[in-house]
Length: 525
Image (cartoon, rainbow, N blue to C red; front, side, top):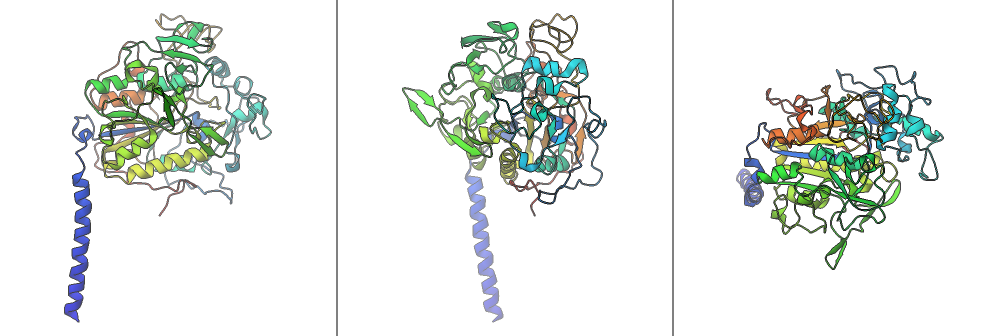
């Protein structure tokens, strides 16, 4: 009997070894990931930027780490010794606010809201010379004819609403277990397109009108060339909507993609809905759509696709990668991919050195057609998938936002880029600061404060960074980590604050994985 038992144990052990051996062979059979051998200045071999939409810092972190915890909602309790952040609790602005409407908590069942006014000039007017007290007057939309969505009886005052850890539960949990910043700003005022361009180039200057509607509110001073200040669409993109203003940067204008290409490093922009649903005569149609809490919406948003504005890194006809092995390398797709291509490359062990992820519209957090709960589902599922992959060991995930949507935030920005365009109104009529010799007008900034988080084995844990940063700080981290040099030509990468304080590269202490529930945002066993 003992002998038979030992034979049974041996058989089980042999089977287990064969199974483990085949799994090991499967990994070994995968082609080596070239990014693992690129020289880097830190242990980070892969950066994944999850670039979301339209959230101010106070809109998500106004009362962090204190949540209201109604019985029917996911419960949030802060970890011991959670550091304080610069929010509405720290300055008493939650109950004694200079705005005409006091800040108020939006309940979890109020996840669907209106899209607020977040254009270049109105945002500056709302700041009111730094008093930060005119948000309802200049940015609040309410339930207007143009924006027929819930304002929960607050009218234009809806712009003063904020969520806490019972709704943006996952974001608060990531902040608890990794690093966040409470001093990060949009590089300039304005909506999505300038934010996307600043992320990858730090410079909205030099854009050129190609065709379509008016350039007023799109290019500074309403000119045919200059600084991009509005949501003009990238010229030539087959999947652009009709009846818009179309612009492009001149061929040869650099961005971080051209720097990475210069060193033959793998990289890609991965966006939901980028893959065509049909192609006719070489022209792509992007008709994929999804349904979230606000309803149905098209997956692909052309003016969120940053690299499409630059001819050298554009894929105007949405050509697909020639193979899975080519994802991240230069081929007909020109580093512009569908979001699913990221997960295909990740599963194949071929995570590029640098990946920018843009959720399909329903999951990108943009009020009006997305919401915090649909956003949470995407962020959590993405991070869970990355953390389950062996390449997590040397990966840094950065969660950043393209603009504030106009949502109230109490912190005045540091003024590092002055401007005297007719669109400026920060410090007076046609003024952003005092006299300036800026060669490109219309880049007034920094703009509103937005969330920034770093999730990585090398991230500091339950840490709040107070260093002043902006969207181009992400660009700077990539440039520094792969020794790419600076873009120059007026890019804010030269003055951007560093993200390195959010990392711990010296102690040897690693932040553990954190698996969250995509529905509740709570930590799973």
